Amino acid sequence: RKKVWVHNMSYDALVMKAKFDIDFYKTDMYDSMIIYHFLTNTYKTVPLGLKDICFNHGVFYDWDNDLDTYKTSYCAEHKMKKEEFKYEYFELNDLILYAGYDTVALMYLIDVLEDMSKNHIALDVIRETYEKHWKSIMQTLCDSMYQGLPFSMPEAIKLRDKNEARIKEISELIEVNPFIKNTEKKMQEIAFEKALVEYDKKVKKAESNGKVFKGKEPTIENGKYGSIDLCPKFKTTSTAHKKILFIDVLKMKVLEKTDTGNPKLSDHIIAKYSEQRPDIDILTLFSEKAKLEKTLTTYVYPWIDLVNNDRDGRLRSTFNPLNTSGRLRGSAPNLLNITKGRGLKELIQSDYKNGWVLGQIDVNSLEAISAILLHQDPYQLELIEKLGELDPHSGFSILRSKVAEDGVLGHLNAQNVEHLKVVKSEYKDYRQGSKSGVFSIQFLGSHRSIQYTYNLSESKAKELWEGHWALNKVEMDFIKSRVHAYATQGYSIVHGNVVVLTEGIEDDMEDKDNMNKIRTCYNAEHQSSSFAVLRAMDKANREFKENNIPARLFLSVYDSIIYEGHIDYMAHISNRLYHYMSEDFIPNQLFPLSHEVEIGIDYSAEFVLSRDEEEQKKQLKEFKEKHNIKVQG
Image (cartoon, one colour):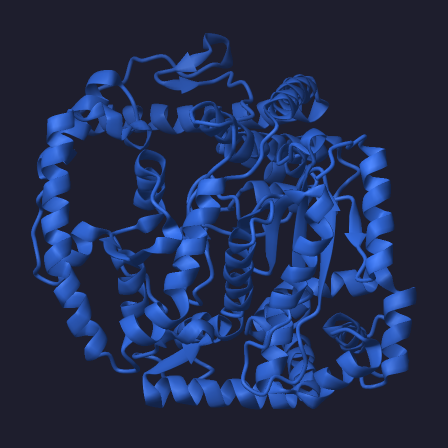
């Protein structure tokens, strides 16, 4: 077996596979970037570039300045942004030279990493974390990245054209909307006031010099005063213009402010305005336009470009376990966070006419359940036992109604399971409104986040916050014990033997800055449960390769595995994934994780696969008939 050290294996391994057909599973892969991340992992951002690490540890200094200089001059000459620059623009001999420097630097860095590992405060990270738990997973991640996702270029082009046409239509509707005329009138008033101020300055300056200013006063008829446009036209791309429309003309409430105290505007805030006032058509138009533009610029355009420039029409990106918890972090375009409901998942489409279909296995409430398995709060365990699921939203809804004194759920008891069932079945909208509050609290948000979300007084918000934690007292006691450990021990070890360094954290849950650090570290405790999914993916992929099962596991999205398999093997593939996803990942685990599998010709999925063998056969037979899949064997 070959032992290979590379800095950022997610790129180099794929190139080596494409050029030399290396077998990821027959290569001992040591990724110095991942190992350094595990050695220095904390609540702060740590630079992980080879040059940064070598510089910080005195290994090697600034060996590629000439490349940066060349890149800067090339971009200036060709009038392109630096992020548009590609490696192929470098001279080949320069790349070979600096690749040699990189290799020498890495050779010296390996010794530094070994010393850091042996002297680590918690454990020998290279042996106990990387080799025992992550080296095999990194092999499978490289294999999954190399596989790529099946992609339908015709569907992508169809979605691109449809969105572009709708954006053009929306822009035309905005242009003739009556509110735009009112906005332009307000813009004209603001511009004229600025012009008068400028004129007044010139008059006073002349007077201070004993002269009379003979310049003309600003008038609307002249159209301009100096550089000030006195008849400005509304531009949909201008944030300043949109602020005037939303705040001054439509009188929308300022939801957020910039650091300088000015109203903040973003696509998220525009969407909020649209939700608050669906009766104002121009808000709906702007919200829809923003979503369509984001769909195109974040997903469709880069996906089309990537697939057109790849070797086989599949969509590829890179991802590494670089979050504090060891959860995957994707590079652009991020395939780990594909937005639902915008036609994007339908673009990830299998070659179903030749028998290949898509599956996804999801863990139900992975982070919340893994947290319960750690803190074992009796209230939450009772909910799971009696309701068959974890439902924090119904109880919170009752508490929220009592505090708000809105007369909706005040007659119910959050500790009565039957009352919780009533909330879930009969007060769905109210319960839905509680989800953002529960999310904030679960991630250690303060009572102020509750105050902002539900527009409560601070005292009422605190009452609701305290009411939630009174119900979940054992969980809060567990959180306090973890915070104490962060402050006194200096580190925490989460799933996958990932160490989180906690130096600088104090045993204080009142201080705002300290709580920001605590949040990152505590959230890593249950977010690291994604390790169980990655481990299952690794085990299953090895089994499928060893037994020549036609399966491709190409993506792990935190709590799920996305895969492709031949229709005639789909039941077997899914059942083996069930098996590996059900394995315990916590010592003396109270109960196994629960999952479900969805099948479809694309990522959007069509049906939930039964756990019953006979029902599976029936479902897959009907699925084949529906899509006219006639391939056998």
